[in-house]
Length: 469
Image (tube, one colour):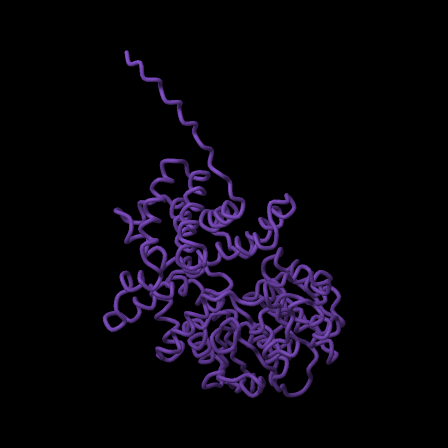
């Protein structure tokens, strides 16, 4: 037996819990496991953390950046991580991939020093995954840290000249089929598609709408970090991470959160020339109520009445809440827009903002780009056409229909309008562009296509159609 004294056993160190990164991981897990949306999951998590005293404003900003940055750049980070592991990514457990994504974003998409990014992420892995998988995370992230983002893109993205769509997909973190579809909608411009994909990866500002008769932009502009909207006379933008819940008019429902593109769609329909009376308006797919609230207020200014219809009862409840306090009369009903309870030819103006893939709002819902599939277009197509047919049957001769989508995909925009109008020869497409005279680059017409990179809005589409007989 040796006379050498035994070394004291090194105590096992407990992993240090980092509330910011744990919250970011929980949000990513909810998005992955429950098909949740980050913009719905994150606010209650942040609110709970503040109430517990775990977070201050800087912590909340970092958690938000980690979640949204990881989701937006998921395709790029997956390609980089795939180059650093010895197995296909599909064989790596999803929670491990979420931690690796958070680590990759800190290394390649933030100013966090590399050693701090690796150590903080490995510590997170010890807490949420265990020591064994934390070692794997450490090994992978040390490889990721060997290059900056540009260096990695040179390695993992195919050259543009060899495969333009795949190059753009990896560099700008969009599925290849989405790149192809957006490029077609833009008309094939390389500069245009690169600008659009970059805009999709930028964090959008919060935009408010001052609902006419209930609030004013002057009131909203008194808020800290508030500036005028770009195009809508009712829009105010909150810069520097302004919190809409802190705005009194928003809490009271007199103002709301609404992208400026949605405001412009409602304004264009409200400004479209109709022949004869202008007394009864319809929002046929009204949930969750943003456009209905603006349309209802604009209708009230003219003595007109809005009927807001929404198929899902819980969403109809959201519409009723948005319209509560409207300065004029209105009605909210839960009804299927493809089997309407109203008589044909009842309305002077009809808005049909149809369900779609949402490819125009990828700035706000970055996870949608990874969830959607090309076959989803086939699922939406029959409903979109049926809703437009209902709208055209619901408007009177001389009245106007607005067909809108939050997608620029040609299969959801011009293809739908062209197909349905073949069945309605007694109609005409109105040139919508003069109705928004201050907004540039609206396309070749007569319809309107808004873009994040050109207008700072979601990629909203609008076609205005008048019944002529």
